[in-house]
Image (cartoon, rainbow, N blue to C red; front, side, top):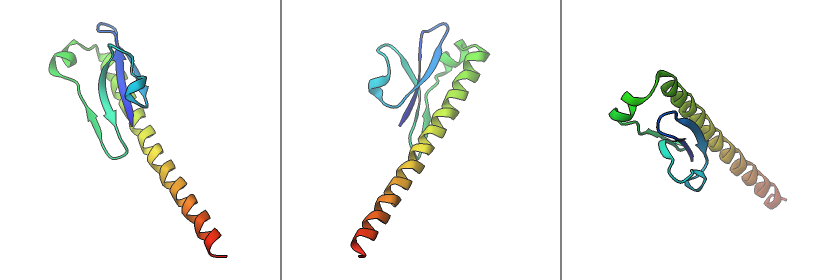
Length: 93
């Protein structure tokens, strides 16, 4: 899971965390990206208060978080496949 969060209210600095424990206290989570889905939470008031640069920065971070979540999924699938292959070779002897 990848979380896109920001600290600050006027000048938001967006970051990506791999778990909720990595999100600082007081930060707001704007998107949660899992292997299957992405959920963004930008309310109308927040959207209206964002600068254009903040909005595009948020979108870029969400895109990066999606890519990281997909990479996790692919990596997990490759690891499982490698493990199955290794076990298959051990027991086929």
